[in-house]
Image 1 (cartoon, rainbow, N blue to C red):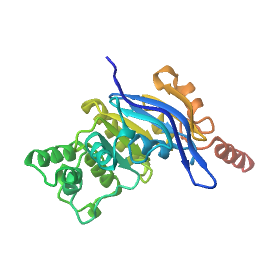
Image 2 (image 1 turned 60 degrees about the vertical axis):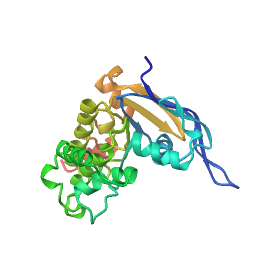
Image 3 (image 1 turned 180 degrees about the horizontal axis):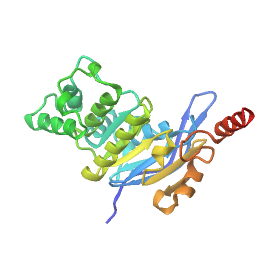
Length: 267
């Protein structure tokens, strides 16, 4: 049985008219059901462009994209919007919560958009999700009365309300401190395990990426490497994704070398 959920074939994205800039260069990528994968790479390499493409937020200049064997290019804008709402959840670095709405109301937004109303069943589901993300006692708080980490948890619950097969996250911990980052990551892994949803995460945090099941490295609009973390030893994995950083403290080796030299000078 084919367990492939998403498949992009020769995806190209170009911007500009007189001067054409190619952000994606013939990318081929597939994602399995229930998979937890990370996309890493330097700024401007095409990570977010690819994520937007896979989430049907943007269309490729050329190439084809399939979700459960349905080809995106056959859909008009209305169909795409309906498809996104029903099949894909989105988590962004900026939470995009409505500050005048409560946590519960923010989670229910995709349901309102899809149906124009909220059933009792959906309301109970939203409460369950807020409990899953640890906000059972905060569901009636206004969004702007929540901490950054709590707001991100609300956005995670919101991405799950329509029970999508795939959740796409673009730097979901980029605005959080290290403790909140770890908590959010563990929450995403728990949801992946318990609800069997596929996750694809764009991240600059290679400490987080190494804990994924799969790492996709990008450079200059192309996929440079694509591998399963279980096939690497801990040392091999760190050498692969962050050779310039200490794997224990995650600081640049050059910075540590400079500090050591300064300490030696001081005796």
